[in-house]
Image: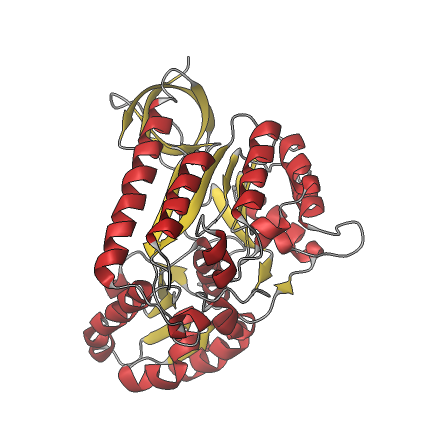
Length: 427
């Protein structure tokens, strides 16, 4: 039996897909990259923006013929959009077998067990095909996603995540460390720690907070790199910054969402920091880690945003000196306070502001990339020609050079294509 997984949205969704996929692998499935070859398809959805939700449901719509060709196939729709729309999703797509909302992912093994019993004969189909531990995992083994917490205790007025994910739940540190050790045995050299507000993590015993967890993960033999997504500025204290600087396994790239440079808009968003506090964190990070790359998120066209408010955001982008940014138009989500605020911005104005933010951040990103020429960077190769540096630049080998996927090697940067770095292996 074969499983095909499709994830929409953030790294957290990808990690959730892998976790759910492992449940199915443990019940006899192997992975396939081709939907038509699959006996089961798992779609993990995103609802942060309407476009992401529409894209996921459009894909579900394309699977009607796949399902009708063999009604015994299993179609599972999971994740945040499934949580938000579960009351109507199966009415819209009656051929979907199972809807698993984001709040039910912890119970996925039990939920899917019942569904599988109705679809497959275990004695007949699974004799001799049970995979050994670690087999059947998806091809991205050199970098492993490890979820450390779920949910969010904040109520940012534009965000649907607390509704679909629930309050914060912290995974026991022992379980996190055990999974990291397992992923390293499977070949992972880089660990990505994930959570909605990942640096809010709270543990017990010797691992009290996120800083302690980082230091402990770094001590596991075989962990060469550590990254994390997505942190909240509120939890960036001096202890965490000192830990990042003192732990060589932690990569010198931080994605630190700011959303707006206007204190008035940040207050309306309920972001719990000011532009001054955000820029103070950026300055402290650069002082502690001089070669750090910092990226961010920007929302254009939040309700009541004036030209002055948006000019303050553009000024913050300049002051932040970002290596890149994910820029979005404000997308009203049903159930959030911002969707009902007076002073909604018209689409034309949102498009214009988004274009300005993109032009500035892309220009800054290109210049930052050009400044890497002449440097030597350690690259972890995801394929035999492409990989990522510690500061998260994608690097491609020049002139057909090839190397061993999964190895980490120094590369002399000789050029730039868009924001991808081009280079040659250092002899």
